[in-house]
Image 1 (spheres, rainbow, N blue to C red):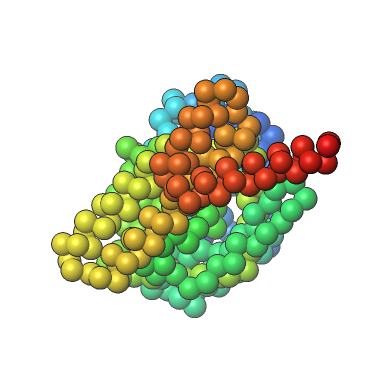
Image 2 (cartoon, rainbow, N blue to C red; image 1 turned 30 degrees about the vertical axis):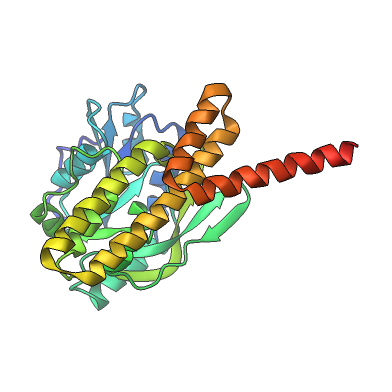
Length: 305
């Protein structure tokens, strides 16, 4: 096993930070997707955040892997610890249940050379649900676009270690939307990310995704938009205020749809609780879903008749 404190003398080009909590088979799959990259000048730092079954043996896969275990402190703290242990100036994040495509690092390192002043570098990604694959369709990014709700997958991001530390890293008080908070802080004073629109990461939607906890995420997302809106109000920035309003509208629809999905798979009082959240968050979405449900049931009755 390679201990995270045992450091070779030469710093790599990139430090890959993988945070892990009860990852099961996902962790080895994620690590192997890094080992399959078309460039090899990197280190992999696995931060085990208090797993019930930690996997220190993962370090046996390659001498570039270092494993660090800690008590459970949340993903924000885990990422901060990973960056503190990193030896490279360039940091790349990878969630334990995501996969990099083989040219991800090679293309992103080329992007760093082409756009050295970017706030950070990111790529497109594939949304994968079963046999369905949908490209994310990334375009140019700036602060207003991110407030409006453009999704940036953390596993696509590369960032300078010095920039990360300069803004204080991930907020340890946040258990949701911590990545969005970080990315917004990096660009809110005018810096812009550099984007490779092509999908270079695979993001699989499954029950274990942290995003399944839609109510907690919604609360954090609305609070984040509120704080950026207050800052824009103080600065008299009408463009940012319009972006915040658009972000709120998008978030209301998104979390209302997620509540409807939860209601469909729930029973009894839980179903009503989810639907009530959807109705409060976006009445239009909730009423549309209710109408569609009634229409579906009516068609079933007519077919039986």
